[in-house]
Length: 372
Ligand code: GMT
Image (cartoon, rainbow, N blue to C red; front, side, top):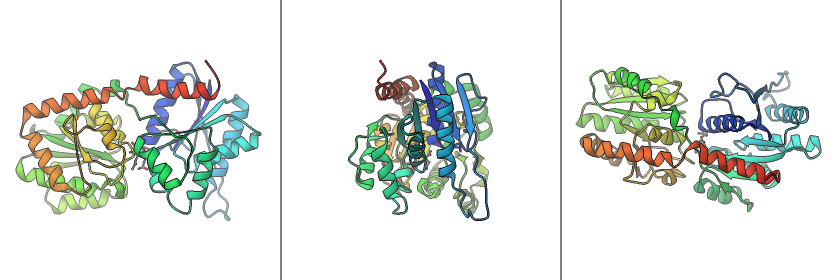
C-alpha cells in the first residue's frame, strides 16, 4: 500500500504512535510518506520505504496566524497525486482531518482517509465551540475513525455528537526499546545512594497536574529516602521546579527534559506517577510498564483500560495525593510486593505489543481499500 501519514512532529504520544506505526508499515513492505511541518521526533534517520515531505507555509504581513491547515491540504494533495497515495492516515483531528478532506476534494476523490483520535483533539480543543462544528463534520466525512481507548470513543460520541462508527485500536509499545544497560546508567545517575526512584514523564501541561507529582513525592520522601525523575518539558515545568525548591527537595529531584530514548530514564524508576486530570490512553504509563515499572495514576479516561488496579498499577481519584503517596510508600517499603508489581506491569504491557496493534491498523487499511 502507498500510505500518507500526518501527525504533529513534536514530542508527544500521538506523534510517537503515528511514527512507530508508519515505520512498522514500511518494515512490512508498504510505502509510507510522512507529510508534517517538521521531521517527526521519532523518525530519526529516514529508513527505506519511508519518505518525509515537509510542509512549509509562507509568512505574509496579512497572516497574523499562518494558514497551516491550507498549506497542509495543498501538500497532501500534491504528494497524494505524485506518489499515488491510496490512503491518508492522520493523527489528531485538528486540523489534520479537515486538511485531508480538503486535499481529497482538490483531487476529486483521492485517497481513503483514516482519522485517529488521540485525546485532547476531542476532550479539550475539539470540545471548544471554536472547533466543534468543523471536527464533527470532519469525523462524519472520514472513511474511518479510530480512537485509542473505549473511553475516548465514548467521549467523542458524547462531546462531538457524532453517531458514526469509531473503531477502538489501543496504543502500543515496542517492548524491545527497553534497554537494561541504559536503564542501569540512568539509575546510577538518578540514585547514586541506591534509594528508590519515582519517575514521571509528560508534556507538563496543566492537564498532567505535575504539582500533584511533586506533592506525592514530598509525602513519600517524608517517610523514606527516595529520588524523583521528571522527564519532559512544558508550560508547568517552572511551577514544578519552584515547588520542588520551596519544599527543600531540590537535591532529590532531577528535571531531565525531553530525553531520548525516553525508556532509559523511565526504566530507571521503581514507580511511575501519572496523576493526570485527563488521559485518553496514557502512553507514557504503558512505556513505563513495558520497562517493568508499576504505575500509580488517576483512574481517568482510558487509564482503567490499561491499568488493572493491584496488577502492575494502582488508580486513584484526581487530586488524591494522600492515597497515591500512601500507595507508593507501601510499595517501596515492601520489596517483595514491589518486585511482584514490576513483573505484573511488564506482563500487562506485553498485551499491548506492537505487532498485534499494527495488525489491526493494517487490517483496517486493507478493508478500506478492498484488499485481501
Ligand atoms: O494533547 C496532549 O496532551 C498530547 C497528546 C499527544 O498528542 O500525545 O496526548 C494524547 O495522546 C496520547 C497518544 O494517544 C495519549 O497516550 C495521551 O493519553 C493523550 N493525552 C491526553 O488525553 C491528555
